[in-house]
Length: 438
Ligand SMILES: Cc1cc2nc3c(=O)[nH]c(=O)nc-3n(C[C@H](O)[C@H](O)[C@H](O)COP(=O)(O)OP(=O)(O)OC[C@H]3O[C@@H](n4cnc5c(N)ncnc54)[C@H](O)[C@@H]3O)c2cc1C
Image 1 (cartoon, rainbow, N blue to C red):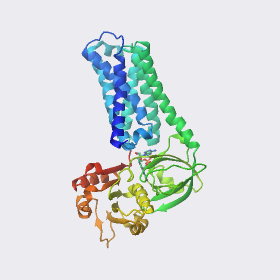
Image 2 (image 1 turned 120 degrees about the vertical axis):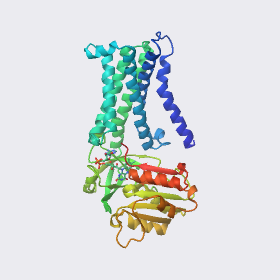
Image 3 (image 1 turned 90 degrees about the horizontal axis):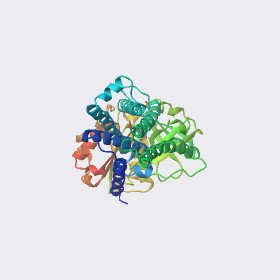
Image 4 (image 1 turned 30 degrees about the vertical axis):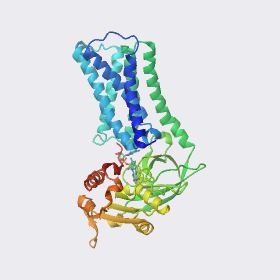
């Protein structure tokens, strides 16, 4: 099926799933409404709870559902949809307070019945979820702690939300309607069990082993891994996977990394990782022979998904990793299509893979434009930051038919996307891989 058709199918399914509980509640015998604002408030509450439930599916890394969009886009949508759900969940009680001001008094004097407490605590959990996600970095919450809290708060917000709906029992008093909400809640718990229990169990049964640790230029390391007792997996050049090292797959300590090896070499897989934080700073300490677990492949950042008569690549720093996978694969395939790589780095001495890139030039129809922000005194190439005029100087005449792949720090992606579009490359030909999911 064409990717656009598949994407449309999943979008329609999402809309259907979000709205279905609402419409189902209107079927069969129902109580008389209490007026427009009251009913709107309830509808928003139902919609918020349904949206929360779908979040569990959205983030469960179902490969079929995420493939047409790319997982980064799915996480981005998850972020936006969560803001929407939180807005609905907030307007829901505000409308009720407006219609029924006595409710506020009940909260303040502490006589709130249990089924309303559940709604209130569900909202507080949701608010904590939003604040800790939107402002995780300014609040200095460690990623690993945030992740565990995120799952716990999400489960709590949903289960209490459903308990609130069941307790209020307005529009959901019919037993089968109550069962519907219970079913939704249990499905979410099942998704959590699948992701946090069954998936790690599956990974445990398919271990990998580190067979080489290579120090690269630019404080980066390449880990080469081999599957142990199984055939590994096939991947497209440019895709990524979640890697667990030195902890159990149950520990929720996996990190996403692009696969940097050629997709034509069966079995072995490599990741190129830059020292940047708690986990990555210790990558150089990994010993040959250590076990690893790999969940993948994921992502749509691949030349194999976007065939074209030629390609433009834009890399910044370790953003070269998925592009190396594509270049290595093209070289192995003896591909002679024209390729242009813009590669931004700070210093020539630190430019990762610079020797191999020179070698790839002889095996491919590859032009490389290095852009150094701190070039050596005798540097004759491009200098400074990547910008419009550099693209204008080097992009080929056939630029409009080429597919472009950008990977690097978020500001570089923003500049490159804008410049490439400005230089006449259709937006549908521009693909970016963001290394920062949250
Ligand atoms: C699709 C994708 C592909 C990537 N490919 C590469 C690559 O090829 N090479 C490379 O060097 N880096 C890559 N990254 C980035 C890499 O995942 C992070 O740099 C790394 O997880 C940071 O972990 P840390 O503990 O060292 O850093 P920390 O200092 O703890 O965290 C720095 C930031 O990294 C992010 N982060 C931390 N832990 C995780 C985690 N478990 N899961 C997701 N994000 C996390 C958070 O935004 C955090 O604020 C990729 C990221 C994504 C999303």
